[in-house]
Length: 136
Image 1 (cartoon, rainbow, N blue to C red):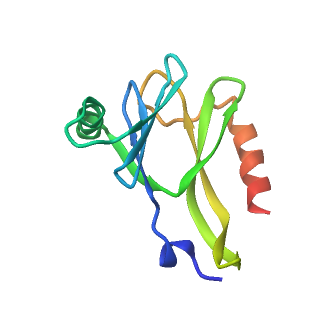
Image 2 (image 1 turned 135 degrees about the vertical axis):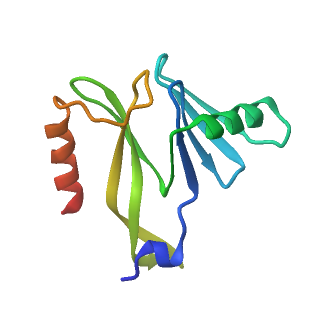
């Protein structure tokens, strides 16, 4: 089957700052996760709005940005909570003219009070187990 990157581009722009993880979809919607409070917030990005201004400031101040295919889930492990993002996907078929994707690579982003993306050593064995199951 074809690689999803040949047919579909990632739609979510991931931005990580010290205070917030932001996922913008198509420049229209914004999901923000605030690690300190574990608050999730969904907003519409409208030009000139306070939300749009805050997002642009976050993008400028961010040390990390990446395009991802979507959100896979959320998990709490021994040390931290993580948001699980779909980093790579491949088309494996179609049903009723809709593409079916297989997730080929996940990204575990710790919900911590700093901008680090480092996975805690105590959590690594669990993440490795999930990654191995996901590859099968």
